[in-house]
Every structure is written in C-alpha cells, then in structure tokens.
Length: 284
Image (cartoon, rainbow, N blue to C red; front, side, top):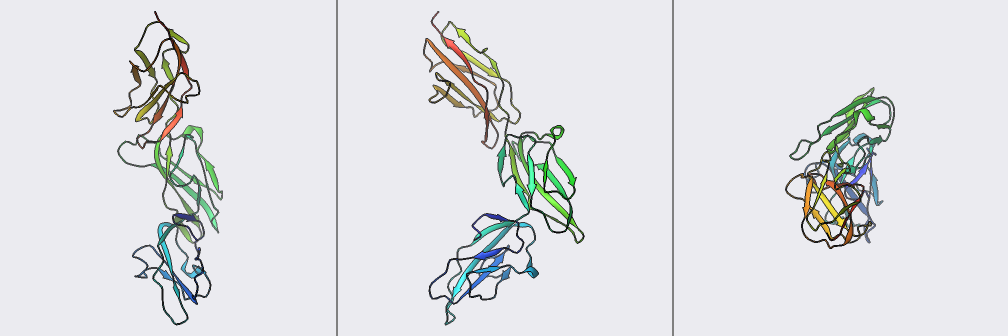
C-alpha cells in the first residue's frame, strides 16, 4: 500500500510491502520526477520493517503525480531490483471522486479538514476542449467547513469540469490538485407522436423530441415491451445532435410499441432515459 492510483489526504503517507524471505532491510523512495533508480525524491533509511512513513520533516505537498517503489536487501548487503512503480495523489478532496459523472447540476463537494485551516476557496471551472459546451464557472470562499453544495441559482451546465480547493491558514495557503467532474445531459422530453397514438397506416413513423443541454447525439430505443428488454430499434446517432428520427423498417403490424430517448455527451457518457411513450400500428 498505497495501491496504484490511490488517493490519500495524509501528507506523510505510510508505504508498505509484502515481506520477502531472507530480507533484512527494506528501502523506499517517493518521487515526482525521474524514476526509482535516480532517487530524485525522498529515500528512506534502510529499515527492518515492511513499512515506512514519510517523515514530518519531508511532508508531501498536496499534488498528483507521486510515485513510489521499494527494494529488499539481505544480510550480506545484496540488493534486489526496485519493485514496480506505483502512483498516488495527495489531496484533501473527498467527493466527488476523480472523474465522477453525475446528473446533478447542483453537486455536493466535500473534503477532509486541514489542520489549522481558517477557510477554503472552492473553484469549479469548465475544461476547455472541443465538444465541451459547459461555460458556467463557480467560485466561492467558505469558512471552516468541510462540505458545500452548489445552490440552485448557480446550477452548472451539463459538460466537463475540473475542481479544486485552496486552503488558507496562518502559514499561508496551498491548493489541492485539479479533479475532473462530468455533469451528464438531462433526460430529453419527448415531443411526437403523442402518447397512445394509433397509427392506422404502415411505416414510416416519425419520432421527435426536445433538445437536451449538452447532448452531442441521442440513443433511441423502440420495443414492443415497456421493459425494453430486446428493442426492435436501438440506434445511436453519430452525425450530430438531431432531434428527429424516421423509422421505415423493423416494425410489424399490428403491434403496440414503446419508445424512449437518452442524450449522450461528447465524451460518450449517456444521461438518463426519457419517460417512455407508446404508439400502436394497425392496418388501414
């Protein structure tokens, strides 16, 4: 421990390995640049235990991109190669987790209390990249608290964001790393055909719905079951955020069909399904 890709709020984290036979000492190293061989970070003394904690004098600043590894040394001084390298992040952020997705446009943020903190600054900003339609930024200074929920009047647009915290104390301030957060598109609202429509002619059937914020395309399902267990029509648009679809084949007469839509953002993350409607096809 820590596992590869782990997050910890401990600025003097403990590193541990599994015991090896005929080993008298273990050596650990923590670094951000370089590699295990160059010893560009903190190197432990040789210890007889299978764990070592970064000393308080070498406290790790809040940041990502930390790496660690270890080696074994026998009684004769023979050293093993360095172990595999693992990465970890030191941050006082708690929730949302890294790269979380949520349909909540007023998400709650939480963090671990930092000793001697006098207040925190929360920053939530859109990621600038092609396809991201999010434009809303949110910044707020908070007192000595460990959570905050964005109010309804400041709701975020669907899209990709990054967020971080700055903590203030008598000694100055420090920042957490940036952490990604994706707000999913809302469920589309169906437009036509009206629910329960009986279509007394054969195909085609025209479906339409209202655009959902943040949608890059939509997924359409049409099934003769309201459970959508084996849809007759299941299609993802790939050529843009069209809000209409014409079904020309694949449906039988006479049959009742249920249909629903969900939005998919530019990252490929789907939002919630719309409420389902149904229509019935019958012979003229």
